[in-house]
Amino acid sequence: MSTYRDVKKITTNTLQKMKADGEKISMITAYDYSFARLFDAAGIDVILVGDSASNVMAGHETTLPLTLEQMIYHAQCVVRGVSRSLIVVDMPFGSYQSNSDIALASAIRIMKETGGHSIKMEGGSEILDSIQKVVAAGIPVMGHLGLTPQSIYKFGTYAVRAKEEAEAEKLLADAAALQAAGCFALVLEKIPASLAQKVSQSLHIPTIGIGAGMHTDGQVLVMHDMLGINTEFKPRFLRQYLQLHAQITGAVQQYITDVKTSAFPNEAESY
Ligand code: KIV
Image 1 (cartoon, rainbow, N blue to C red):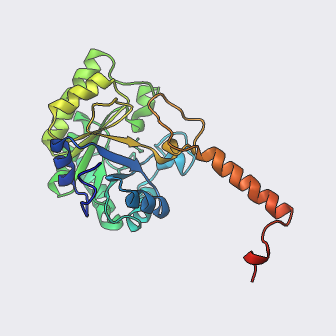
Image 2: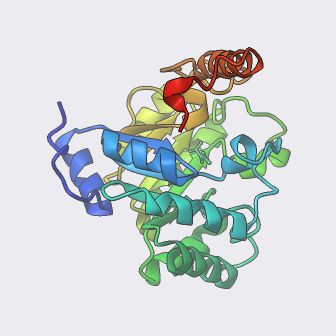
């Protein structure tokens, strides 16, 4: 199936080669040791320690409250479970938007304190100087355009971005600028498939889509969404590969019944 399955360690260079060879890149989020270990052993190419931790781990409505310290903690846990996948760590809101010195200081903290392999920042021309500075320090940067959840209060909605020509043109220009600034890959979130195809064809760095159609160089999903742990979040782009919400609920209900009826533990489960 994959000609890259035997690669011992996925690097940013591997991703460039995968794009050149037409091999799609698989990426999933993880926030802790146990799931990161499972995903790495299953053969996932890239693990994103996403700031979606703010939603799925901490229960916040948006990604904005998550702190740099909290991201560092999640990334440290993930790193301990991974031996093959490339690890990308999200820079949380407030850790890079002020200026490029602050961006570099935050990126250095993530690299030094977590052992992650790269970082991700949301935005285009507005953060170009920060991206250049971080790349110049030797830190690989993944860009993120389209729906950028850290700007949700500017957008006002999680609807599809760049449907209008002006926004689509800016996104195309931003993608080229991020590549020129040295980004090794680009997440395209919730944009029309035709635009994602145009961006992907215009770049030599790989694009990773989420709600961006089938023509990007790879796909990323949030683990809780694709495993069906969330039931409330079912956008059109999401494919649920498991219905863990129902399975976990059933298992815990069975456990409660077994405890209440003294069916657990039995003789064999006792010392
Ligand atoms: O934080 C996250 O999970 C992300 C993905 C949705 C790309 O940025």
